[in-house]
Length: 120
Image (cartoon, rainbow, N blue to C red):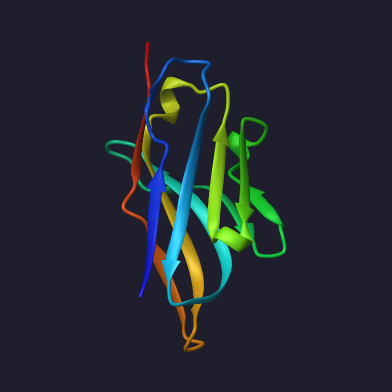
């Protein structure tokens, strides 16, 4: 079993910054990919950014330059630094991961989500 726990969501004013964290725990051998998705009310869940174990990243085109994903492999943790936040960034942010278990089974898992609200 693997658990992903997000933290860092909050209410922030437009133009502000937030840093989200997601820590994975459990029977982890390796984590291939960690990522962030978001889902705004009435909309589909969308990719924000992903980071591979070697450090390669990809981002939603609309978010490049404002959001930065990073990870600490030793801590099995992924971060999302969000700058210049806009009201349209309001959403529940979810962490996901492709995890190789100690049994060498590959699974995909999601965190429970953390609310980010951008409003004055």
